[in-house]
Image 1 (cartoon, rainbow, N blue to C red):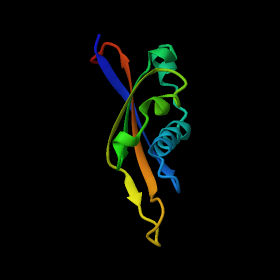
Image 2 (cartoon, rainbow, N blue to C red):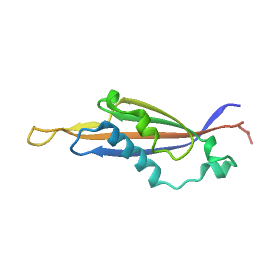
Image 3 (spheres, one colour):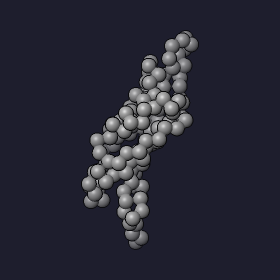
Length: 118
């Protein structure tokens, strides 16, 4: 049975002062999830544990993202996190201290199911 994507959600998160890429990534995921209330599993007659969640996190320093900590945000589903280069680091106006970190998240929701052509 093939995997079919049925939904993609997007979010943005920040770490204002600590240059915490993981926290910014977690906030981006929360932004994507909490902004929507879509019951995809129920719509297709699946249990929520059947959801396949492929998550891409974009930050300036992807190696600084603890993907396991980001995965803990999800209450259910089969979660896969990938961190990649993107997002923004915004320097402080005075030029000292940590930059503001902006992370972007894209969450693709899929299920293993057959496609029916109508």
